[in-house]
Amino acid sequence: MAKIEITDLNFYYGDMQALHHIAMSVPDRQITALIGPSGCGKSTFLRCLNRMNDTIPGTRVEGSVLLDGQNIYAPGTNVVDLRRRVGMVFQRPNPFPQSVFDNVAFGPRVLGLTRERDLHELVEESLHRAALWDEVKDDLHQDAQQLSLGQQQRLCIARTIAVEPEVILMDEPCSALDPIATLEIEELMKKLEKEYCILIVTHNMQQAARVSDWTGFFWLGKLVEFDATQTVFTRPSHKLTEDYITGRAG
Amino acid sequence: MDETRQTRGGEFLIESFIRVIGVSSIGFVGLIFLFLLREGIPFFFEVEPGNLLGTRWYPTFDLFGMLPLLLGSVLVTVIAMGIALPLGVATAIFVREVAPNWAREILKPLIEVLAGIPSVVLGFFGMTLIAPLVRETLGVPTGLTAFTGALILAYMALPTIISVAEDALDAVPKSYRDAGLAMGATQWQTIWRVVVPAARSGIVTAMMLGMGRAIGETMAVMMVTGNAARMPLALDSLFQPVRTMTATVAAEMGEVAQGSTHYRALFAIGIILFLLTFVINLAAASTIFKKRRRGGLR
Image 1 (cartoon, one colour):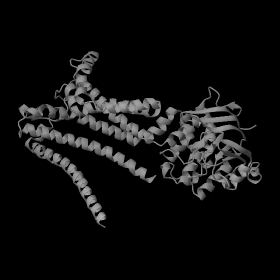
Image 2 (cartoon, one colour; image 1 turned 45 degrees about the vertical axis):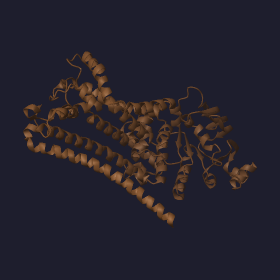
Image 3 (cartoon, chains in turn blue, yellow; image 1 turned 90 degrees about the vertical axis):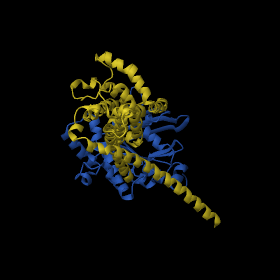
Image 4 (spheres, one colour; image 1 turned 120 degrees about the vertical axis):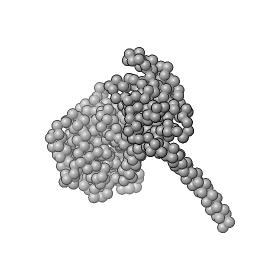
């Protein structure tokens, strides 16, 4: 069964409809890439999956998003709990202006974990899994914002996995990074894929082709094509997809 | 060619004009300070230190103990800040983080208007409404007490604290809030663990500016504190009359013989006040400066 099952999802910013009848099945423990030109709705779609769009006034959602069979838009859904299960990594690395340790410990502390020893263990493990431990282990109390951008982004990933989510949403996680840092994040994603359901929005075709198992192509708020990455990049079933991938459209 | 020279000439004129204005306003402040020093410094040589540090302020008997006044100012200011700081920060958080947009649009200008109420009006308000209230609820002989003064001062410092703290919260990038919420923190957890710590230096600045406003305030304080120059050291002195440095200067300056020791004593109080506010503002400025420098790296 799919980890996330999206059916007939419409999304509106005020009167402007940003997403039209999106339907998609996102498999667990695989990477799903969302591609498409700027403003096509892929980031909006991603933010529908952890209800981050709720924080923008004047927005409206129709349709259903089932996470393990539960509609996250059903009345009475605990949004705080949902966001713990569905973590998010943002486009620009956004560590808090606090120490490396406090950044990773933020989520566990919010959940009520206070024993210093447990926190230490969890922080170390999360930093290991985010492939950052070796670079920061000497000074966990340095200001997180003094790290390089690539390190900051891996710190944000460590912070996200510290609360043991089931799904990780990544909104163009590499667009602010240099090629080496980008490669590091991609390797990390391949590693994390074994434990999490990962969705990534990217502008980088090669990145989608390199890391993802499934690819969805968005165009003007519609999901034009959704298939195995191999298929989308070699034998796309829509002319528009082919044009976009080869750089003739978008 | 001609035209360029003309523009250059005009440019030069305007530049010098602005420079003269800027330099002279700094100069005037300097002159005021010099005047204050000239009138006040001799006092410290005229009166022996024992008298100066005494506990009795009776200028007619040549007793110039400044401690009761200094402690009076400190007591009223500290209590006022103790009231105003939590209230101000909480209000700032409410206005910036919790209130819906339309409420914020109404509240912000309203709070700024509060800052413009003349202090004599607040003093009047304190005298006729707050003082009787304090007297009756606490059962003290007079409502004109240090506590009444602190209440009025807290009220006066609030608009400054709220608007500066609100600006500080506003300057916290949305991405921090998003990150907090996306981690599964509640709105309150995000505010308390992410936004407020990130705005800390601005909140400290708000506190300093509010304090500077409180310690320098004269009229309202003079009207509601009762103006008895006694040492506020007893446990209940908060609910008894005190006299602040500012009120002393304002009350006595009109009756003093120019050039007398008493006259110089009032200027000496002015110097002490000046130094106090200077230190507070310096502390506020240094936190702002620190924040800027850190901001420069990003």
